[in-house]
Length: 183
Image (cartoon, rainbow, N blue to C red):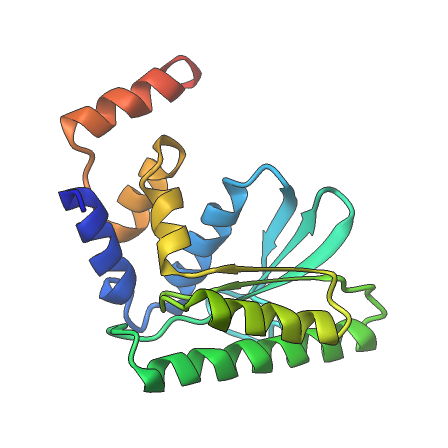
């Protein structure tokens, strides 16, 4: 694992401890890297009733998605932390469905962000739970998936802004070769 990948992984585990607002803002920007998501909006990152969602978005300009952000402080992927995140996913999903029904929103998408590394079977079980609750599109951005996005040229600025990881000369070169003409 390269130094920046290691640093990014470690920062996702603990750099934003107790800073839910910055966690939500970072996740919103990570989601914006995926061209399948549009009309991405925060709810109440500084606190307040978010009615079952931290972020709202459209998937493929059609499917309304509510997004939850469930990070733990000092993530170490222990069984206790995994249980906490699985429960958080379930709670956020149920809250999103309940509030969408109350607001007469045809909710068919749910996206969940976590700094815990979930196994494939754990992620599949959560996605199945969403499908069994009427959600057609469900994605989970676990730590490794966020790490990949943040360590791509598109994610370098997000990584710098939220995790305070400077660009190496090599990363600067790839960043400017991709974005230089747009700056």
